[in-house]
Every structure is written in structure tokens, then in C-alpha cells.
Picture 1 (cartoon, rainbow, N blue to C red):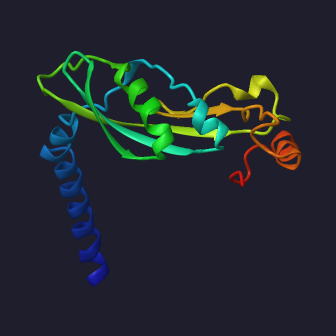
Picture 2 (cartoon, rainbow, N blue to C red):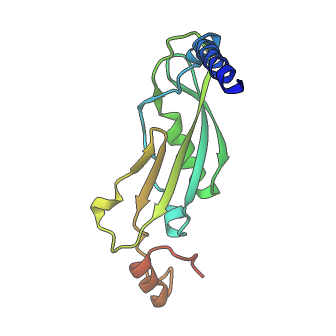
Picture 3 (tube, rainbow, N blue to C red):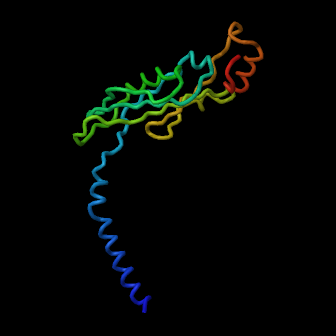
Length: 168
């Protein structure tokens, strides 16, 4: 007896859930503003001082975007001090798609990952690597050390393995 009643009740509940799912809940989701998409991207230069010091890591920049897509301001979220200025200057030059709605200011996080690769890595592999539209990895070889800057042992380490450890 219970199984005969359970089937129609389950069927009715399924219909109610389908109707409720196609109602107001999805209308409000459709109104969420789309994530700003970059139209013009400027990559930062690896700061020479950071490169010479073997400084690597991520820098996140929060950008304020006006309705025309222009970056109007930046805030640094995290990153090494020697990499921040280059990342922030680059982020200021990005241009995003214009907003179709009158939303005013929009915000987006741009992440730059600065990485120093060993000299064995070919030049063609030093191209920027994009993981998303706003996340990019900047790759370079270590700077060529001169005899006045480091020992012969350190120079060999840099030639073989890149910046695996900080200089002495």
C-alpha cells in the first residue's frame, strides 16, 4: 500500500521542484554581471634587480574598472616587494570590455607569476603562459652574473639550475 502511494507523491514532488527551479531563482542568476574580460593586456617586465637577486613568486593586483573598461585604480593584494611595482604598472595599462549595464565600478584580480628558469630551458619556452584571461606566468632566464657579483661556484649553479636558492 505504501509503495502505491509513494510513487505518485514522488512524481508530484519532482514536478514541483522542476517548476520551482525554472522560476525566480534562475532569473536572479541571469542578472549577475559577467566577469570583466580583458581586451588589451600588457605584460610586466621582469625587474632586473629581482632577476639578479633570484626573486620569484606571485603578485596579485586588484584593479578597479570603469564602465568603459579602463583601469582607474589598483590595490596590491600580495607579492614580493621587488616584483610589485612592475606588476602594478602593467595592470594599470590593461583595458577590459565595456559594461553593457550601468554598474559603475567593477573589480577584477590580475595575477602575475614571475619565474626564473634554468639556462637549459630553450628561449622559445620563455613565452608567457596564460592559465586564465587574468592569470599569466612571466618566465626568464637568470641574469648573467659577472665575476664581481658572485663566486665561480655560484655562477656554475646559476648556469646549471637557475635560481634554485637565494645567493649567499
